Image (cartoon, rainbow, N blue to C red; front, side, top):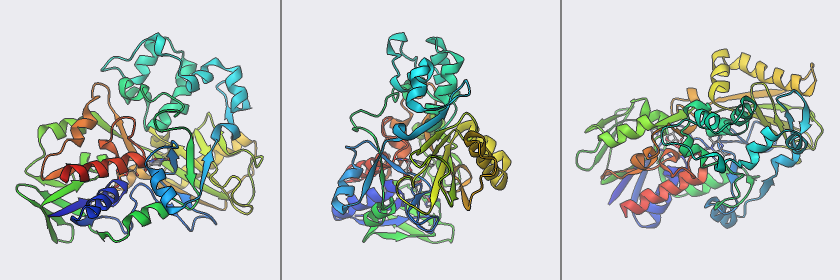
Length: 415
Ligand SMILES: Cc1cc2nc3c(=O)[nH]c(=O)nc-3n(C[C@H](O)[C@H](O)[C@H](O)COP(=O)(O)OP(=O)(O)OC[C@H]3O[C@@H](n4cnc5c(N)ncnc54)[C@H](O)[C@@H]3O)c2cc1C
C-alpha cells in the first residue's frame, strides 16, 4: 500500500516517519528546494543558528521533547519575562515586572483573571467580547500587542471562543515555558527526514482522488498512491491554486471559510555589538514591530541578533512599505525605543510568510462562529487524509508540535 504525502513540513515529515515505521511505501512531494516548511533554520545569517520561521518549543512536555531527548539536542529555557523591557501605554520604559506592578491593565494580559466577567459567545470576536465584559481601551491595546499579535491577526477577526481559551501563561497540560533548540530546529527536521523518499522542487498542481490518488505536478509528471496525506498550508488551500478532482466536499469548503491565515512575519537584524544592556533579551515596543527578542542573548560574544515578530495590521503596514523601507522602519523603532539615533545594523533579513507562495501566511486562526472549522478540516475523506497545523485542535494549532501531532494522526487513520 503506497501513500503520497503533499508537503515536507513537520506535518508531512511526521506522517512520513510514522507510516514508514509501519511499513508503508511513502513518497513526499515538496514544492520548495528544502524541507521544514514554515520551520526554516538559517545557518549562515549569523555565527549560530537563527530561526526564520517556527522558533520555540512551547511547553516542556510536548512531543518535540521525545526527539530532542533522543537526539541529545541542547536547549535553553527562554525566560523572556526576566529580561524584557516594555514601552508602556503611558510611554514609560520599564522592566516588564515593574510595568506590571504599576499597570493593572498590563498585569491582566498575563493573569487573564477574567473568567468571572463572563464567557465568550459562539459568534463573538475577541475585541467585542473583551469590550462587553468591561475591558478598557488600554487593556485592548495591550491585548493586541501582548496576545493577539502572537495569535496571528487583529482581535476583531479572532473567534473569542477559540482564542480566549488560550489565555494562559502556558502553564498548562503542555507544561511550562518556551524553549529554544540551540542546535536549531533543522537538527530535528533533518533527522525526521532521514531515509524518507522526498522529492524537492515538486510543485503539486492537481490532485485526482476519484478512486486511488493521482497527483500532477507543475513539470507535468504524475505520481500515484493508494492514499494521500494533504499537509498543504491553509493559505495555499484557500488560494485555490490546486485543482481537486472531484471537488472537495462542502465540509472542507466550510472549514476553509471558517479559518483565517494570519499574516505573520519576522524581520531579523544582525548587529556588531550589544544594542542594549546585555542582559535584556526582549523588547516590547508601542510602535511597529511591537515584539522583539534576541536569540543570541548569552550565546555569542561577537554577533548580536534581534528578531522582530509581528502579525495583523502591523504586518500589513510593513508589507505596504515593501522590504527595504520596512527594514528601515523596524530599525527606526529600535532607535526610538533605545534612544540610539545612530544605531545601524550589519545585516538584515525580511521573512514575509504572507507573500511566500508555498505558505501564503504565517499560521491559521479561527474566525468567530466557526469553532468546529478545525475539526472539519481534519476529517478524513478517504483516500485523502488531512494534516498540517490548521487541522490541529485549538490548543495545538500554530505550533510545531501540533503539526507533528496531525501527521501522526493522519498516519494512524490510514493504518
Ligand atoms: C513566523 C513564524 C513563527 C513561528 N513560531 C513558532 C514557534 O516559536 N513555535 C512553534 O511551535 N511554532 C511556531 N510557528 C508555527 C509553526 O512553524 C507551524 O505551525 C508549523 O511549522 C507548520 O507545519 P506544517 O507541516 O503544518 O506546514 P508547513 O511547514 O508549511 O509545511 C507544508 C509544506 O507544504 C509545501 N507546499 C506548499 N504548497 C505546495 C505545493 N503546491 N506542492 C507541494 N508542496 C507544497 C510547503 O512548501 C511546506 O513545506 C511559527 C510560524 C511562523 C510563520
